[in-house]
Amino acid sequence: MGGNVRRYLPFLLAVVAAAALPAVVRSGYALHLAAAIGINTIVVLGLNLLMGYAGQVSLGQAAFVGVGAYTSAILGSHLGLSPWIGLAAGAALGALMAGAVGVPLLKLRGHYLAMGTLGLGMIAHIAMVQWEGLTGGTIGIGGIPALSVGGFSFHGDLRMYYLVAAFVLLALLMASNIIDSRVGRALRAVHGSEVAAEVSGVDTARYKLQVFILSGGLAGLAGSLYAHHTGYVNCDSFGFAYSIQLVVMVVLGGMASIWGAVLGAGAVTLIAENLRAFQEFSTVIFGAVLVLVMVFLPAGLWRGITEMAQRLGLSGGRRRSGEA
Amino acid sequence: MMPDASQLLQYIVSGLTLGSIYGMIALGFTLIHNATGIVNFAQGEFVTLGALIAISGSEAGLPMPLAVLGAVAAVTLVGAALERTAIRPARNSSVITLIIITIGASILLRGVAMWLWAPDPLPMRHFTGETPIRIGDVSVLPQHLWIIGIVLVTMTALRLLAEKTQVGKAMRACAMNREAAQLMGIPVERMVCLSFALSGALGGLAGAIIAPLAMGQYNMGIMLGLKGFAGAILGGMGNPLGAVLGGTLLGVLESLGAGLSPPGWSGYKDAIAFAVMLVVLLAKPTGLLGRRAR
Image 1 (cartoon, each protein chain N blue to C red):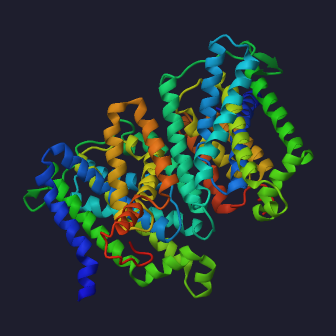
Image 2: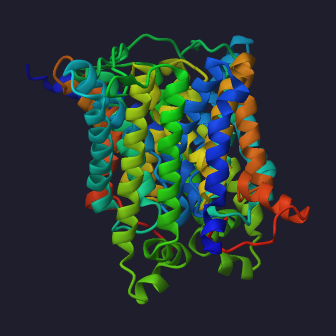
Image 3: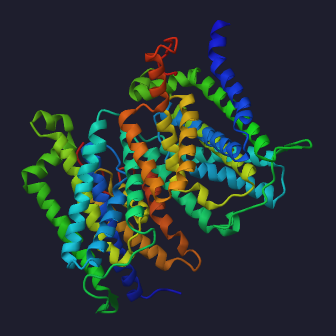
């Protein structure tokens, strides 16, 4: 029982913090940003499992987010189906697409998945721009209905924020459970040494594929949430730059750490948003910050903060390898 | 509508021009990949800087050869500086961390390019006028010939450098086996720095000679860099000759694809390079020539 309390304490704290946030920030714009951070966090959690535990990189994750968003947009706006169907279909199509690419590419070693997803992401984005009959091209698709339960609509920044927060919490719990499960142990073995893991009877290709499909599904789900949140999607949101931004969120926050995913998504979303005022300089500053953090904190912000906390004696000194 | 032979030749000539640019970028990727194992995402920004610096040089009244050489020299320094300031301090980090550092550097350099030059595309004078030269049924801009010629000379020179000189042999030794090279007394770290400098030179040159045809813009390097990367994979990642051939082939395929596609589909021409890359990865991941060394 004591172990359980310890295990779920961080989640409890996260719930309290997330619930209290609207009382602190108040403005609709800040809640809108918080929802955006939450949506990015869902994508980054999947990508973090893939990169941090399965040791594979996806440079095309934006494509899966885009698939989810367009699925919701087309089903909800054009076909008038329930947003919940769009949400389920968005997640399912993201997972399906990941499976279709992952089956052939994950049999290869090294960074082939990264190269393959890079190609897939580029092609998917070009299709989003060009295939105007389906995606609306640069004009996009508007009028996407908000999610609702019974007569209660998740419309507006506050309601949407709480809905996204709930999804983020579910995703966090799921990721944490996966990490502590048999699959998680197998993945850590794969990351440590694929050959050794295989010799010990771990079906490495299957586990890697499962995580990749999961990451595609989470990305699709996040895309759907995004579509129902903003009510409008267009191709500009799902290009190579966003794929890169997602990878940056994972690494900046810290690989192999679910709280790092939250931190990375938050930091990058906020930096990108706040630097807009600096115009041309914003790109320079963002690039410089990224290089500096990677050079001085190669394990990411989360590890950097926890290590600092430990050094200051704030943490109980409890650290299991692979968790944190 | 079937294109006639002269039209096909026309597409092939422009494809070879573009492809030789991709080939140079692909070679830049390969040099750094072989020396360090990382994929340098700032490769495209080397091209951007080469183009923009050459444009400024020629605008300032420098003779064209000086403007081009000045751009090459400047980007060579940028490449070496990137290695010294960002890669070397983190050399003990994982490959993915190093790749993210190059991504950060690419964002930084793009920002600098946008800040120092306007965000709008800038034109550049062609090296020797814009009067097309007719060769049989095909008309070619002099700039096309300049590009193909300069790339051929550069590649031959690099080939000689790699095979005949001590430095070239040392670099190849590092690509084959870093530890063994180090044990043989080869200064591996200096070779890594050299590979970044050379990649910078190649990217800078590619940018400076394509600028008259493509114009210079702060974000031009993103697509060029990624296509060069696709060319490197098509040729066989890690194989320098394969990189050049893969890039060239990709340029020709893209030009033919854009020229022969039905009306309304030409917007998909940018997808050709990535579709080819995916097919190669799925069908023959070692590329056309396979990996050499290692």
